[in-house]
Amino acid sequence: MNIALTAFTRRGAALAKALAEALEADGHSCALACQEKLRDILPGAEIYASLGRWAGEQFSRRDALLFVGACGIAVRAIAPYVKDKFTDPAVVCVDEGGRFAVPLLSGHVGGANDLARRTAAITGGQAAISTATDVNGLFAVDEWAVKNGFAITDRQLAKAVSAALLAGEKVGFASDFALECPRGLWEGEAELGVWVTCRGAGGPFPRTLRLVPRCLALGVGCRRGTSEEAIRSAVESVLAGWDLASIRQVGTIDLKKDEPGLLAFCASLGIPLVTYTAEELQKAEGAFTSSDFVRSVTGVDNVCERAAVLSGGRLTVPKQSGGGVTVAVAMLPGF
Image (cartoon, rainbow, N blue to C red; front, top):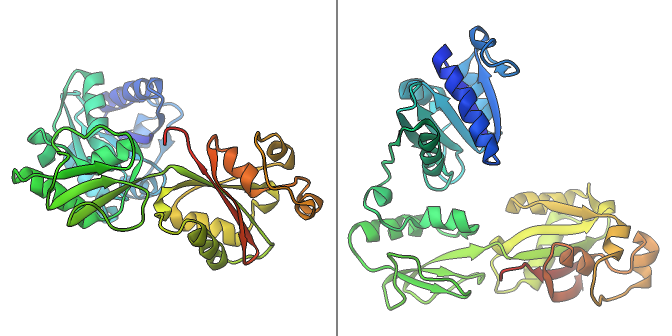
């Protein structure tokens, strides 16, 4: 996680520094910030004049905000920026004595509950988790989806799953992949159930929450100036019956790294555009559809198939062409 930390007292600043060091040792990226008066304790930290303005800036830049101090200060700082549990960053507050770590926002999807638990483990304190499924020891579908990298296709059904479990009702489970049924769900008939799938519609239950693994890598080639709409149409045609949420990344040649339509398509799905040089594409292993014309333009005989397999996946759908766009699909390892 990319975590921003701040504190308001000298004791709190010392704890923030210790937390940042421990969290960075865990592999997180941490950025400290404070008021001018604490610069000597946190050398190199960002100095802010307004806590509220700083918090607003971090909301769009960080995965998590960790406040060391009173919960009330943190709540007032973040209040103008809170929007949606599926997009807000995790927010955790820990008192300067390290006794209680409180997840304030985005406990499951954003990972605030886990961050609070880790914070408490570092300080020797206690995580004050209040989400109903955690309190009752029940399966939390949103947290499970995020930890496994699955896209949640219906927010209301995700809430319905939690509500049903809290009411003691059966919630079914089905998967198109070799997954063990999570504890608390069951593999049988149910009115409401969870289905792990890449399919774009339907389901084995009257009310089915589809969780979509990001298991596909696309390779895409296009003419200069190809629109986002044309690229989307070509991809949807190739992935007919699949949910576009199953795409983890799009790969192409570096000549297209600034192609507006391709960048807009990736941005609309929240996925990265990964580019490769002609030399890198040429080193891809496998049998590919060769084109002398493509070689004359790009320096390599095939862009889309080679870019797809350079993701580390196996070629599942070879080169498909239409509307000035070529698309190939690779299935990523583990699926």
